[in-house]
Image (cartoon, rainbow, N blue to C red; front, top):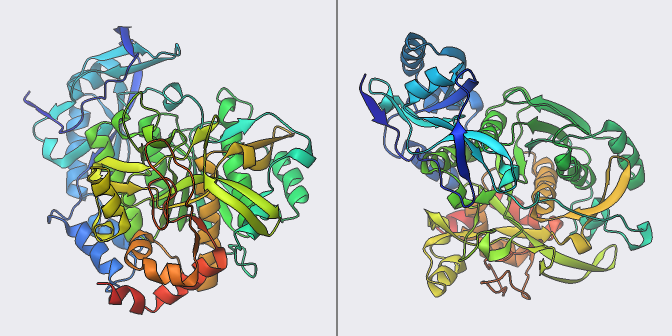
Length: 537
């Protein structure tokens, strides 16, 4: 049987990980195959996004996407036939998500995908199965497949020194962090709207939340108990106090922040496995979820770009590209390790925040004179961490950054990639949020506090405008003068995140800065007419 390599499928080689033996031959493996679009025209999706940016078309519905850019049913049938022929069972397929899931024992899967599966040990002692080299598939179906996931089951938690929601020890309430409602007032969120009628998708890889925490927390911050739906992806579920309880603070922190800054919004919380493929599956599922139909995603997870295979990066980026065309705003934490993204040397950025189709959210240190007035705000950078930011090594400067300060600073720092982050808000745990986890109040933050805050602001703006703002990045950069005129941002001009310095306008520490919610909404309303954007093209 002739086998053909899947381009870019080599598993990344990470420091400290070593093979210690072969995978068990009778282990059951579930593999997700990501397929090509039924529309084979080159740059077809990019052209539609360009039309969306210029106001020549409306965002697609999920049904329209599936019919236009989903997987080809003929491709699905062909792959299913070949997989069954080689002893693999077909678990499911989804045209909109462009996926097929197949299952089989380790030996059959290894033979079908042309890899030797091994048992590996990570530096912290965690064990996982994976493979070396590239994935290969039967030649007759190779042109139909973009990426395969599930053969490498390394856990993200084993590669990340800490979750991006950083928890500090409890403190007396008089010395504690902010309530999210306080931060929303300080950032002047529109008060006549609450995010009612808007669904925010929240991506979580492990952990869970206790409803009792939410009942008590809602009373404390004086907001209604939010509407929450837990969505299972890859067999995962809301599991507070379970084996992955380390991440209960991450889950609860994301959700309680949203509950405080957008109390009227519905939350669909997508629980998935703590693996690269689980991450991709959850975001893909949320983007194409016809039941809950989130118009905003809050993503508090990420890793340096080098921790992903090339095919994984491009496939994941394609999912975020679909989100843009569907009018979904994807708010991603820019990372908590400053300009290094946690790598031992050099300047790097975190993915998926580095995707051109993500709204990358950096972190600040926020001091208030009173609950309604900002005393000072600088780049978050201290012993607890620092705002992630810099320039992508994978994604080039997008067109909407090429004539902006992002391009000027990229040239100054001798970089060529997409500038990160786009925006910011409080991320320093020392000036972070008071949250309630397992019945105890603790202070938490990180840039994953910034992602749900921005998701909540977008929810309020969506309600106020009566429409999703969708893919906002081009508007922020191409019409930056409009946002500046409206006073939509508090520029962060002091501090650094390691290699990069803050300053007026956009910078690779905090982007355009933290929000003035009312003025941001006013700027978005101006953009609704299309006049300001058209003037810049």
